[in-house]
Length: 322
Image: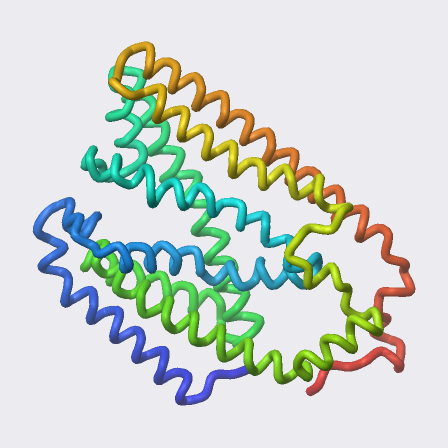
């Protein structure tokens, strides 16, 4: 698939728009640190929320979700649907405490929450861990997904395309700070949602609609479990581990808040111990879940007979269209 002149004009138009956002908001973002990193704490809820959703709808999301649904079924989305509880707690319960504390990062919140030398060490650890490890991993898998899309789908040199995209994002975010991020996120989210709906309609019509889907289920080429929102009985135990992690994380935050009221030494100590306890449980659950998922996928792959693998030298093997 190659880009047409219209495609390149659309891309150039968005690049001009993003740079324009950086220039327009540059003076406002340069007023102070809060204005640059937090948009002066004046963002409306719907704009902040849309920016958060758009961030999770990055180039890696369509690839991994499509793979899950294709290989296992719709039900495997519970691996990330279970995180909705934590998001609701953040919005409706904990956001008010963030705003009241006038903090900028979670590392800063930890120091404000507990106080003392230990809290300063914790803040330093969290800042280093999140900036150097967590953010690096996330950036790497998002950029890798973008490189695959540009190289495989659009046949554009991945080094050039990723370098240009990163340079553009760094330019407008450096100029406009968080104002540039949320503004471009709003436009990107609109484009992504409209494009997804249009693609879904074309894809649905391409396979023949509901009639073709029912025929595929009746013929056995499409499993009914693939379309199920509830994990099959054989998958319930495996899915219970990552889903439980979401609830454990919520309990960890709740206990950390309740036992810390009053900022007493006993309350802070109990909060820290309980938070560490639940964090350890959550980490173990995640490791066990990933281990179980990997084991099941390995077993499923080894169970496929050799005859099920298409032989490219066989004249009867279907060929992709030229």
